Image (spheres, rainbow, N blue to C red):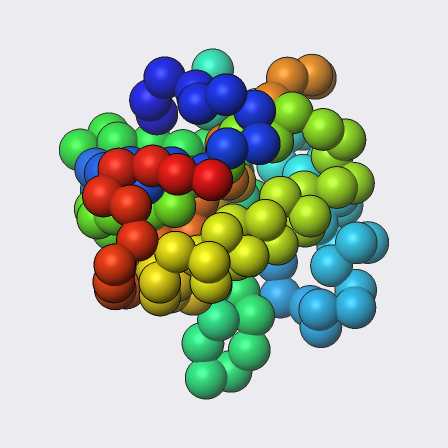
Length: 157
C-alpha cells in the first residue's frame, strides 16, 4: 500500500482504486467474531491468494453490514474465482492508522481513527479497509474521508 506510519498515529493518505476478492461475510454484527475467522479459514484453505496482501473490506448498506475477507488486488489484475466476490475500494483520501497491537484489538484501532477525525474536523465515510492478515505483523487500517474541514492537510495526532 504505502510506507507504514509510526504505530498508532493517524494520517491522511491517497489510495488508488483497489479490489478485495474473497469470501462474503453476511452475519449480524454480534456474530462477526465467529463468522469472520471461519471465512478466513475457508479463504486461506482455498489457496487463491497467490501471495497477495490479505485484507478485509467492509461497509454499511441499507441492508446492513457487509464484509469481504480476501486478497487485495489491483483493478487491472482482478480474476474472481468461483465462489468469491469482488469489492471495489475506490480511489480517494483515507484516514490511516498502523495497528501493531493484538488482532483482537483491531476495533480499538478503528475507534482511534474515529476519535482523531472528530478532533480534526474530518468527516469519515462508511468504507473500511484492513490490510495485513499475516501470521504476524501490523495491520494498516483505513476509513474513507468524505470531508476535511479545518484539520491537518496531511497528518496529525
